[in-house]
Image (spheres, rainbow, N blue to C red):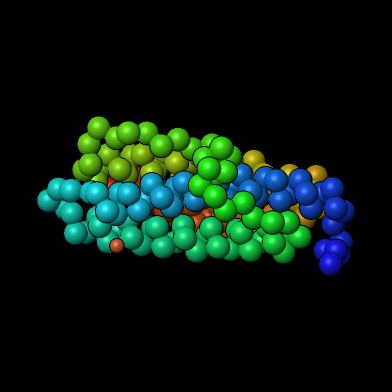
Length: 157
Ligand SMILES: [Fe+2]
């Protein structure tokens, strides 16, 4: 059945297109954070193992709410790793070391790059596409990334 929520179909499609790209970023960052959780080594292993777990759990929740938001707008959610890799802005570098600081620097840079991208779209969603709900949702998402970035950055002083 057609999605009639006061937003033109063409705008719903454009919003969904941007959300799908964001979902790809979130999925890649979720996987990179799991990699850190699994492979980190060093004297601070256990503490950082748990720290990365707390972050991947938040990212897991984000991918779920984001995918469900795409469905609310009447669009389907790509859910293959191949599609995520084709859509994401992030890259999967080979890291030279598996100590916690190396992982944290890499993850911080991804959270910051996602934050910049989200911030650029807040106004777009509200003003260009008349989708206040997604604009508000993306603002909340931005705040979650800002907090996760702060947690990472505070280890790197
Ligand atoms: Fe685990």
